[in-house]
Amino acid sequence: MKINVQIAILSVLVLSVVGCGRSTTPAIDMEAGISADYQNATISFLGPEGTYTQEACGVFFNKEGTYEPHETVNEAVEALEAGSSDYAVIPQENTIGGAVTDYVDILISHDSLAVVGEVELPINQNLLVMPGATLDDIKTVYSHKQGIAQGKDWLEKNLPNAEVIEVSSTAEGAKLVSESGDKTCAAIASAACADVYHLELLATAIQENDNNKTRFYVLSKESPTTDEAQRLAFIASGSAEDLTSLMKSMGNMSMTLVTIHDRPLKTVLGEYNYIIECKDCSYDDYLKLQEKSNLELRFLGCFDVF
Image 1: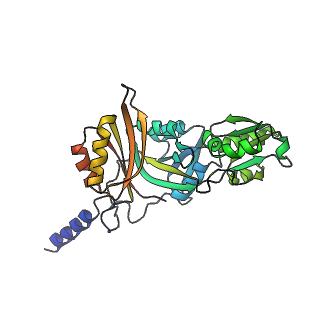
Image 2: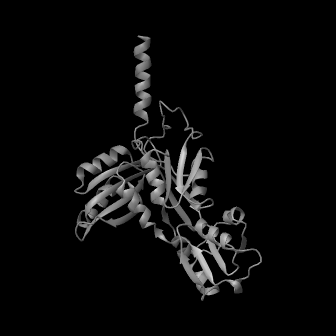
Image 3: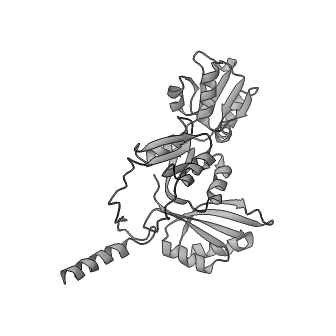
């Protein structure tokens, strides 16, 4: 009788945590315990050292684990696919620059990946230069395309004649300036890069929007969780004609849309992959949505935001 009672109690606990945001009962991982331990985890990210992606890694993993920088986001994700890392962190969307479409495409193309977390990181862009350089010295500016987009207005006003060169990351731009030793070169990057690459901050907070943030996804190869969480994400693939019906069904189930990005399905005109993130919903809601929709749905996971 005691064994049966224990099994019944355990069953109630398990049933109480199913869903992505409806229940107020904390999610319980029966194998991992109450909280995740990332001390032995390897995390791949867009390098070099000092990128905003690395900063997002520190936020999500609480500065635990081993961080491995890669030259491109694709290489960081391939490391996860190959099993040389346990997680990969990728930028997904920025307040000013919008969806980071190249990285969204990478997520879509790897159907074995799940989203296990999200970081919303405030972004302050700065102009970094060699020590002693002045604004009049600058002829060339390096940065990632998102950094360029975010600092576009400032550049047009303050450095209208400078050549702007796109590089793989904001930190890569800072690294190039440091290695060149050239006072005519500058980079748009984080303040942390000034310390890493021994540069000076010539101008701070040059982004056009003080509410500038970037959303990062934390990816894993493990099966996507259906446990209670703040957000739920999935990919819907098919004709744009069917999107209206999908949105209507989401509204009827009180699922709140957080973000939606469309990428061409590369079949015929009018067919897309839609990455959809929502809140105030459960995994059961997703299953009902899947039954009703003419679009093909691929579940990415339930996760919390940091």
